[in-house]
Length: 304
Image (cartoon, rainbow, N blue to C red; front, side, top):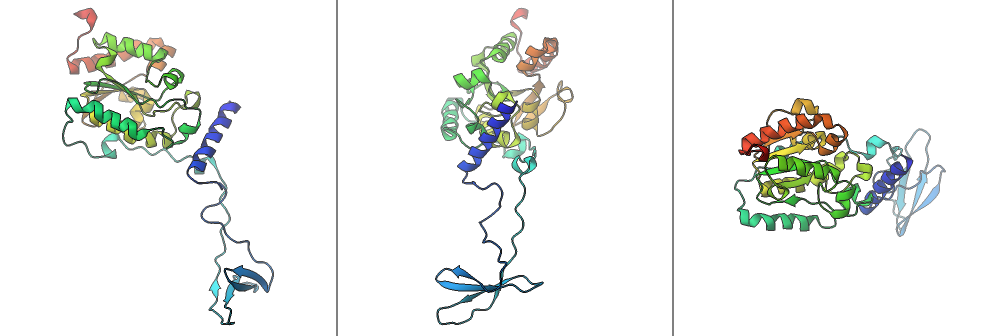
């Protein structure tokens, strides 16, 4: 646990340094030391300045020109004590905005033949992303997305794991194998659907993405959805549902009914990684997928 905490702290430090922030104990520009002695002379550019301390008053600086011409006194505002760094001041508070409210919905559907190129353009814009702390937390590859640009069905998870981080593809580990089985049970193959995540870089230790990480990545995922324009989106797990819908509710309260996201119907179900830990919930997840199948007119291969 200590190693993971140290890694995360280092990630934040490198992130802020990349933004040009090197002093974590002050806000704004550096200030001069407070004057405590009367008649102390300060250097002011090419002129000189004297400061007199008067009991009960804020010290004043008088700039003296070369010709001994006195400029009116300018009060010096006492600097406020530097804020103490706390976790709440470093990590922004959770701010939830649904994907429907992040940007206007597209006015026209992109032709199917142009979607692959549009997705490549988004991926090129992301580049070797350093927009959030995950770039400095041991990430190997950015996991953009995978599948058909013209998919009717889109799956969105939380974030890449270790296998995904190495291969650069979403859902290729054990959870990915289970997702492939779930897709197959719906009468589809992986190449028929589109798969992505809330964040495109692996969080350290597979932890839940921080708000700054998810909110930084969300505009790119939103654009992916708008390009593919699926008929149905399946949110895999509570984290995906929370950011897509902009609400923080229990998974049980979100499952079993339709929501909307970027013009598509959205269903919520369990994340495959959770189903690996608790296989008893696979039957419940299958109910969610059957709801999706009914909407898309799909038939399970076993019932053909």
